[in-house]
Image (cartoon, rainbow, N blue to C red):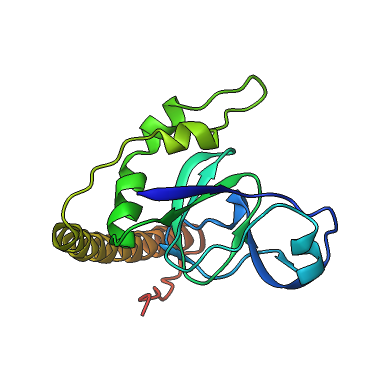
Length: 188
């Protein structure tokens, strides 16, 4: 279903405009990677074996840590700490994002190494994933998008409640210590 492309570190680290993703660029709250902490020049890109992969490629960290997943939101390249999966047929990239997201423990279990665990490109190529019909992939991805948005809203509400409870705690302590009733922030 996918071609597996390994990343690389340029021999010349020269800043530029090419997005160069390392495991440090993953953000657990975003599905798409559109930027990186370090961007490299065309000359730096040419100095190594990394390849620019198209948008919607799956970007998977394969060391430090194994199994963090994102989708390329723009054409980009990666360090050797990542592998990119480029679809070789018509698939729903978001569906496979969720498949790899759910497979993190299995991917970690496939890691090897004595200094640190690493998932090899060969192991990744042999990793089995389902291949339902394209419409089913799209339906599952849409369902998971809706459910994840609902959970994100619940998390936001809980975080707001925690903020308000911490403000109440501060106010209670302040009142007990100073004898004055402070105003409590409403968080809004």
